[in-house]
Every structure is written in structure tokens, then in C-alpha cells.
Length: 149
Image (cartoon, rainbow, N blue to C red):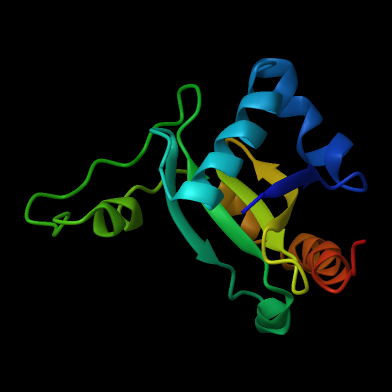
């Protein structure tokens, strides 16, 4: 299985470039680690919860996903005592932060992904901007419905 990952060119300058100025090595590392994660299930130490966006409700069909990241000073939130982290999946679910990699998976080639945005350092505030999320959902829909050769 060959996983293909590309940055969305329509959103790159606004959502990725400022972060890559601060973390220049992250541009390639993020792609490489995302490929490993999606092809093997191996979770890099700075990857956390991986889930879909549900707000606003009109973007639910877009397949807009986000992966919590721990980069720079923005670390994962401490896991509360007594939390069940008995499996790697349960541990991953509880690794949350205020940085998120927004992405989509292609419908026709399930091994092809588009990295759409990197919300750093205020992911939750960024995701609460419903107009922004609708724009990103549009990128996700376009990518998901593209047939590649």
C-alpha cells in the first residue's frame, strides 16, 4: 500500500506557511510522519487524537478530519488520573492539544490524503469560525471527489 500525501495549494500560504517559518523542518517531517501513520498505524510521539469535524452541521458530509499535534510549546493536555489508556487507540484518543492538522481522504483512492490546514497555536478558536470551516470543507469535498490517474 502506497500512501500519497499532498499539501492543498489553495490553503497552503495562509494555513501552513506561517507555522513553517517557526518550525522549518516540520514541512517535510509532517508529510513523512503522516505517511507512516496512515500506512502502518504507527503513531509518532507528537500525533494525538484523530477525528472528524462536526461543526457547523453543514460540513459533516465533507469528511474534514483533524489530528491533534504537540509542537513547540503547545503540548498535549495532561491525561487525567483514572483515564483508561490500556490500548494504543485509547491513549491516542486522550492525547489532545490546541494544535490541529486538518486533512481529507480521497473517496476513490483511500490511500491519498490532502493536508488542508494547520491550526497553531489556537486550533479550537480557529475551528469555531464557521465561515472558515465551510471554506476548508469545500477544499475537502473537492479533494475527496477528485479522480486521480
